Image 1: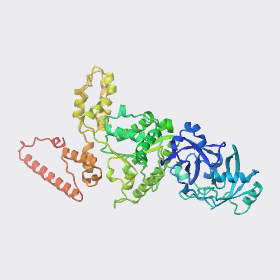
Image 2: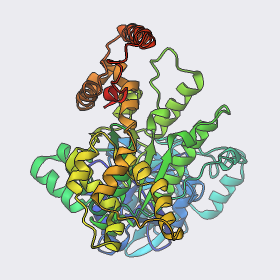
Image 3: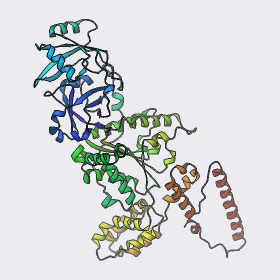
Image 4: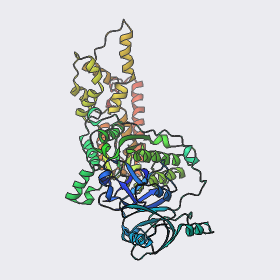
Length: 571
């Protein structure tokens, strides 16, 4: 079972340096794992003797305090990643080792290290458990040289020297104790040089404070049953017991987590609400918090990352992911990018600017499969999925269309928005079915923000403040009249902007069919390829000609045919 976790490292002194303790259900049957922290990657064994104790670890990982020196110390602002998809062949075999110890029975120590296939970490004081006692020794030299981790085998030639000789060797020029080792074959390079500055990261000006999710599927998201079911199935695989059951019954491929999620569809139809509701679902209707810790929601707008200063947007992307990794390290994080298409423009576009291409590359680097731990879920939302770079789209293997609601769901939207008003006016009857049917063509956001927005609030307040004003009866008739004062704009604007992308929409059939249906309803034509602009120009010219003819007829007194309202075509 392949897995990557971002855990919170805690140091102890009551264990061997070659072993770490992780919650048993997080890692499966493996006994060899890789740890990546900062720019160093090292290998450890899982402490099987302490599995019973590890059930309350949640997102913590225990390691010996000496092992922290392998990474140059623990920096809690950086991810501490645990990789479980490790093969023994990844760890170099130790041909020769020189160790220093004052233990009198060096032969037994050497035999023990070989039988344990002990993992030596260059340049630290190692600790092993021999006959129930913790025994320490220094790793003075290993062959091959320069690796963070090597494995002792029966073929390893171990030379044991005393501490005084080891001190002499280390004091000589070329002593090996403080020589930085290169990473093992699958790992990154050396630690950064002393004095390397991270000041650039500290100067990034973007607010990415984690939030506690408060929007729920049950109370706040009307309809979208298919979307809700997809979200619940996605979260179910974060339950170790459920995941193991799926793997046992259907195989590991079908038990693998689906990865990150892309929500796409017309604007104003609930993508942001769905994202926060997924985080709420994870926190309140799964056992994710008992397994990992507190669920936190990190919403980010793509526009907030963009900057006119070179390189600033790329640094903001990095800062956002660093904050998400920190949140995941202490629990479970849901990172949500609204308007994600602004961050991952298609690099095949010849009109793309250099800074846009660089931003796409920066986002892809942060979304690498080896960078996203199991306790971090990334969700993107977009109105225009066809404009996203194909490599970025592949980073979101789960893709869910969020449709414009029909009359039944729009009725539920009215009911949710007017729940407080209905409670305060229980004598007033509201026909939500009629309201839902009358508001087809609107988006939920238009109902909430325009029809029931600040203008309505001002009117209701005025009816209380002005003693001469007639009392308002907020019934079905009243809200139908308010609807007639408005006209749906969002979908017309959206369809107008994307109808010329018919070819690109072929990759998103649900959205293609939706746009085609709406274009037909609105009297707009769908355009393909290079003829789009020509057709639009022809249509505009024809419309202009008809207007000029109509104006001429009107000026000569022919008014009998001039009563058609322009709004007829709008409807």
